[in-house]
Length: 272
Ligand code: HSO
Ligand code: ZN
Ligand code: ZN
Ligand code: ZN
Image (spheres, rainbow, N blue to C red):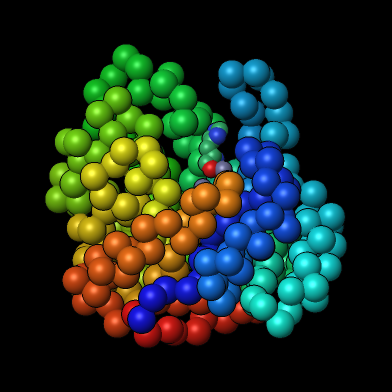
């Protein structure tokens, strides 16, 4: 069965997208999508280093929700639209983020690491003056720091996001090389009954694998993990549902029979 649900989508409510929400919806409908979940960026306490700009990823959640409800009704006979958020996790924000999540009736919450000890792995300075491996390890251990203090999310986003931006990307990277830091993350997620997502946007960064890599997906399953959402992380209409067949094939190869969609924060399992 083709996967017809995309659980990681941005529109102009995110600081790094200019696509009107309705353009994303119309494209999704034209692709035959059944369930689309917007997951707009909310990265509190984010400083865009290049321009020393603060607040680039502050989400105006009220106007986002206002438009979402409007389009949900307008397109109700064509597609299910869900209200999600991609929360940028940082340990010192744990209490503020918990409070924020409780203020809205989200269908789905992705917890993502976009900053790591207040530094942004998106920029070269994160890797300069040290081996790539050290930077990747810093990123993974900061995920564990987040998990120790924050729980109000459904899936962890693009677990190995850092390899998109490293000097050699995922050329010298594998699950096995980082097993000692990755296993505690996966074990903790499973203990907390949290999922992970397969994020297909790495393809446009020229990665050899999706995020996270197949080794991580296999290991999560092996340890008993079952909650997997699939998301394109599209910021523009052309990326919607991209590489979903590949994601589904990888998941089946790793032993998964289902992927997961969420409504009102409750998982529903859909056959792959
Ligand atoms: N959060 C973006 C990437 C980024 N832009 C980091 C600036 N910093 C990924 O959707
Ligand atoms: Zn983004
Ligand atoms: Zn992200
Ligand atoms: Zn995203």
